[in-house]
Length: 405
Image 1 (cartoon, rainbow, N blue to C red):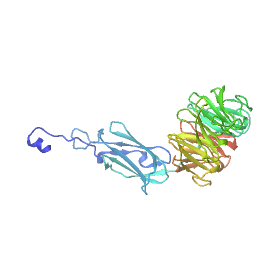
Image 2 (cartoon, one colour):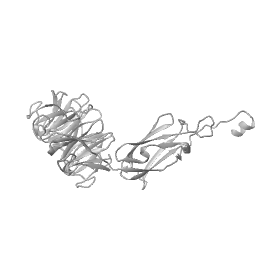
Image 3 (cartoon, rainbow, N blue to C red):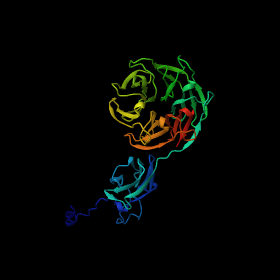
Image 4 (cartoon, rainbow, N blue to C red):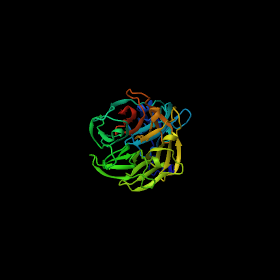
């Protein structure tokens, strides 16, 4: 075509440009360091070749057909991030975000249209997973803001903290700074009363759901504590429960109940109608808690000291964990939570710590040890995540709530 254009003197042929990698620039903290489980980021600025005289040197240019790729691996060429996002601002600047999953030195390669930019591969030092305590409230007792073996904990979209104050047979509600707001309930078997309640969940209508170990039911309350209804009742029928423990909600608002005595996970509609069950035929030894994440249901099987994963149809997929004190080993795991980064937090109860995993079971980090000081635990039982990513833990035998960041 070029020969025809030139030979026939039809005019001139201008070849469309593509950004050259050597004219592009990457900058930002994420090119040098990161932290396990935390967001790392940097910017890529694309530039046009200097051969175009109407472009000032160094001016950022944009071509929507440019292909920007990022590859992050360790020295053994293994994948070492949970997610990479490339956000195209449509102006020649790309915001690149990634989440390191391992503590080690990694290499980061950036390509534009298949070519390496200057400086690549970048060497990134990934710091260890770190958590620090920022707040602690509560002590043993029966007064306002005091606890007697707290179990389940849940948080609202407004970051209120709701606690199943087990041996005081009541629910207590706090601000995220630990300020007591109100409580409701007392010991008994009638509507609105509790007997060894264990799990707490809060639905989109800000109703508070409570599972009761000894009353074999789930009760539903308004945000102010007014009794709205209940479902369950002692038994082994699909609609019944036997010593339920953990309580959570799926993505559609259905209620997930760890029907521990029947060794099943059961799912109910928001008004308490049975939908489906997971387990049976030896699937569980002691299922304590179940949380949904994407297409999976994740269950802590406490006396098998492991985490079991099922698909949305309830079919077993895989498990991880075993009895022990090492990284990734468990000792009677209790309640679970999934962070905004899709990390699984496990209350490793009798190891007196919280362990953090990727959803495939890869160990990410841990925090806590046995004791009564700030940041230490005596049987952490339940965990929840505030909107600012701070971690709320019910410190069962220390009769307090701790918050970490």
